[in-house]
Image 1 (cartoon, rainbow, N blue to C red):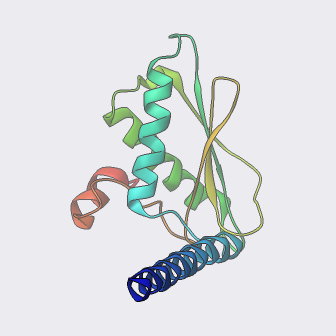
Image 2: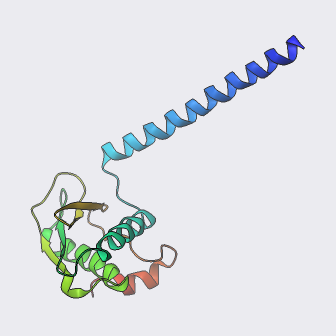
Image 3: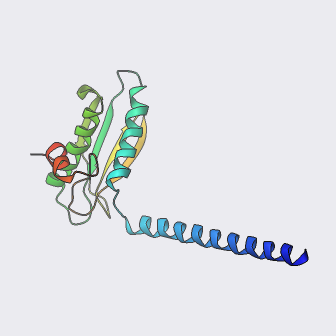
Length: 154
């Protein structure tokens, strides 16, 4: 009986140690990615924009959603910024926001990756980061060719 209890305790210690190691590796990965300024994936962009849309649709009709594109290191602000704004704005319009409630602007450059900042209800609601000199990945995340036709500035 004592052997059985000791083996259970040893297994429990092993399981806890492995779970802790997995959690530590995951946490380190997130911290490293944040420090390197990694860009948002298509799924993360969709999630962020859907959360903003859901919160904003419940807001009074006179409220505005402000999208500000900021270029990153080594990017030309006007071209890449317009493309990113177009993609985010188009996604929000397709998802049901009224065109009259969305304001877009090109902001000052920032260090690191470029981004689109979304301001709603008096504050910063979300930040979407992009790879250097790249469009923000948008759409259904599994049909890149079709998404490019829909969400990229022509």
